[in-house]
Image 1 (cartoon, rainbow, N blue to C red):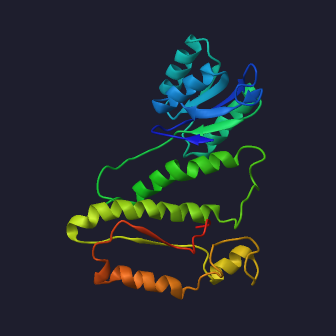
Image 2 (cartoon, rainbow, N blue to C red; image 1 turned 45 degrees about the vertical axis):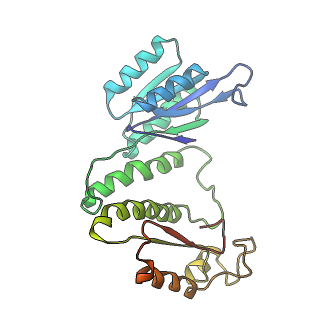
Image 3 (cartoon, rainbow, N blue to C red; image 1 turned 120 degrees about the horizontal axis):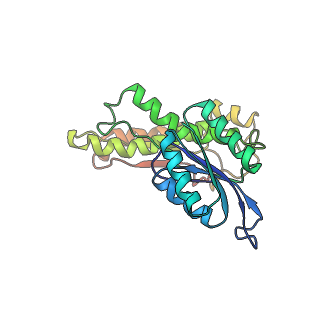
Length: 252
């Protein structure tokens, strides 16, 4: 699974590789039909992939399919706006119909309806960017057979994704607000002894897997001093930092 660049589509395909070039006999790929996505699709098709290209605009699909088929490559395509559930369903259905499955999914869709102040962005802009750039790859993956129900430690994937976005927001706002003398920093707690963690592990005891390099889990008070410091004049030259309080934990 890969992600890249600009565009508003995904491609899906099945691959036959003589000699198992990618470690298998067949594979499936989903990519966009425009710009970066087109270049990826061409490379994968040349490497033996049967590719399904997509774009929210029919003429982009038609142009990509014609160009790649003109090179003798195995390509089909369909219109897909990845922000729309019915389009995502059609993209997956097209791959299943033509090639019987999806072995690789390459999400290239990306939108940016605003060039300007982060804090000046409307709620509609935020919704559109997050819907296409963040939610759509996960929702598209959820439609592939066998993936729903897969889970990792803690089962907090959606929450973790949302919090990871704050790390980038911190950096952006630090740059934008620096001329006004406003500092922006982010506290990044590891696994702290809170009710939230009790819900995560569904028990009162500490988790039975290593979560940090120190002897015990942190208490909420161990975050408080860092915030107090960041709000003080002692931190007057610190901005744009994501400060980790996790006992050197691999699980943030």
